[in-house]
Length: 165
Image 1 (cartoon, rainbow, N blue to C red):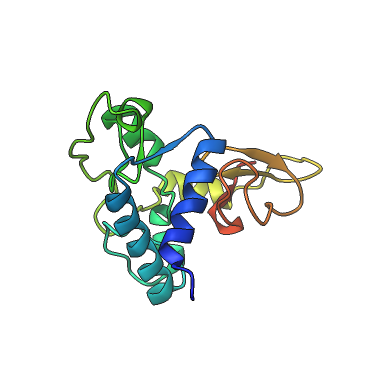
Image 2: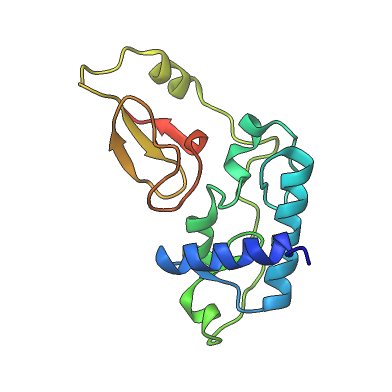
């Protein structure tokens, strides 16, 4: 019998969320449907884009919406749940409140870099023995020649890191 990839993904997400201080939506059927959407997007695009957003099919353009998305923490802090409600705060996870509608934080067409950000990226970096890399999902910082293959905190892939310094 073949295992259900969505159920396996959901189990892994629950374990990783718990280990990192996050909670997954307690509505098992709803959470499984979201995991199925993540698996569908992984099969379609090669990456697990948020199932509640329209992905472009270009991973570099969609990095901000690869689960867990860049907007998760701000959404949980302000609304109690992320945009798709896969990740929720403790009150929702423990049944003391319910998830509510979360407005879209992602700018239309995806994030754009300002002229100042583009100039900063082109400016010479300060002299350090190694560049400093920041995980755009959880903020983890590390100084090394390349970002880690997987963030040790939130488990996202190498391409979710940005050069910080």
